[in-house]
Length: 216
Image (tube, rainbow, N blue to C red; front, side, top):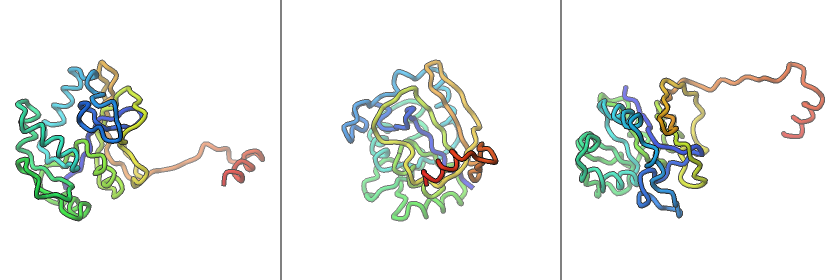
């Protein structure tokens, strides 16, 4: 069974918009495009190489596809050498305009198609960026692994990684590392359902009982 892996850059307040440059995604008046640039070091570079070292198919939302398709075919580096020949699945209503090599549309029912792909033989499906697509997959419990690069920034506004519609689930930390610039790189794998408990005393005080009545 193939895994769906979401890998993304994110600020401390959960923003993932336009990490690569000012012109990448200025939608909504976002003014901080390129916020990751000054934080990359050799540790981060090694982690990126590791991420792309194993076979994968790319899973992209339409906006991220357009950004990548206008950039990677014209680059000559190790990431371009991996991205360009990779199979790419795109969530789009305009399948006729997918011109980047080895690209295909996920079709009208994205969730159903991804469930099929997960059952097929092949490499894992790697999401890059694609916030809206991530929201859809989290709402349907389809993401198996989340790889975050958490940057020490508060951006205040912008497109966020997590919405309010995710299916509740527990994840476990399987790997973490910090860069010299304070970026935390963390990998989480799905770990079943959420377990709850309580630190409350067995016999609550009258004040606590009143608080509970007030907050209902």
